Every structure is written in C-alpha cells, then in structure tokens.
Length: 290
Image (cartoon, rainbow, N blue to C red; front, side, top):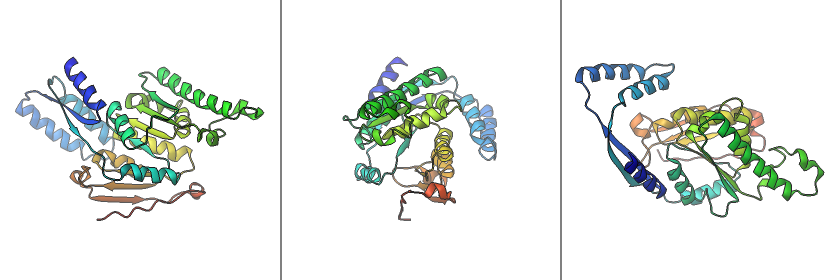
C-alpha cells in the first residue's frame, strides 16, 4: 500500500492519469445474483446513483492490491488559447473533475488556468466541517484584507463584502482548489454561501476528486444564487448529471471522452433562461461537427 501510494503521488505530480489495479475471487452464484441487482439498480428512476454506489461498495471489499499504472493524458491542441479567449470574454471557467488533486493542479498549470504569478492558490482539503469552514473563511479574509489595502483611504472598506470587492480583486489574481471530501462539507447549507463567495472572488476554481452528483450540485449552487447563465460541457457518463443541471448542457464524445460508450454521441440541452440572468451576459455559440 505504501509503495503504491508513493507511485500514485509521483505519477499524479507529473500530470499522468493513474489507475490502481486490484482483484479477488468471486463465487459464480454470488456474482450472478449481484449482476441482476446491478442491472435493476441501473434502471431505477429514483436514487439510482445511491443504489449503484451501495452495490459497488459491496463488491469492492477484500480486494488484493496489484499495483498502479499511469498514462500520459495530453491536452488537445489549442486548449490553453481557447481558455484564454473565454477569460477575455469574461466567461468564468470552473473545472469539475474526478482527477486527484496533484493531477488536476498539473493540468491547471499546463492550460494556464493556474500560473506561478498568481497571488495565492488556496487549497481546501479539510476532512471535517469545522476544518473546511476555517479554511474557506481564512481564504475569504485574506482576499478581502488585500483588497482593503488596495482601497486604502476609502472609509467604506471597513464593511466590504464579496460583491463590493469584486472589482478590486481583478487586480490580484487568486485560485481556489478544493478536494471532493472537503466539497461535501462546503456544499452544506451553512457553508455554501461562503464557498460561493470565495469561488467568485477567485480567477480560477478547480474542484477535484468530485462525484457526478457533486458536479451537478456545484452547478445548481451557482444557478440558485447568481444571476448568471451556466454552461456545462462534459465528455463522459459521469458528466450527465452536471449537463442536465446547467442552463445549457453540452455532451461531447470522441477520442478524449467516453460519452459514446454511455450512449451519448452528442447531447445538446437548453432550457429557458431567466431574464434577470441575461442582463449583461455574454453568449457563447458552439458549432460542433456531428
């Protein structure tokens, strides 16, 4: 376990996509019953993900670890330039990925979403609600504190809020990186507003090691509390919930994604957008080749 963990950290630090391998012998009769339960759970309408998670947890017990593999996952040509154009259009880009923290950050640097010249990269990795709360509040206070210095001499800066300070924080660039286990606590009702405040004050937001449900919850959080049009783009079956939650959802299949394997060749989903959300909004038109 220790050796494999070291290998995984080393691979992830190099930006490689990692895979741990393990096995166990399963009784044929038990597997036949388990497979039927899996088929049933995959077709239910309510709580499908929860039921599948229980079944996966059940069979993924008592496994013998074999080791780990890693492959290079290169960015498609033009990705950094495309992201730069979207940023110049004032479109906020949040990355929601299942990758390990090290891999997600490495990819963030390779596509220029994270840069060495950024003032601060806040990493939220607490395991308890209290730890996550402290880390988020510390990040927010740091950003607002710097903005007070920038706005020195203005009496009103004593009671600055996240909305008040938005223009000032454009001068100083920050990034927020949050782990999946921390995001679980950050999405609780008592912390979601703090999470949203910090995220909106940052130039870049990366949520790593997140589940398909958490991806959808992050999109829903923005829809509920911000006058913004949300666009979700995904290339796999684990992105479907996120795609369906956004105002505009785009599912793409191809060399880079596995959406085709889940029956999604090209999914375009659009819903009516509140008029308030369109005020001052920019429009992004995607013209995919089908």
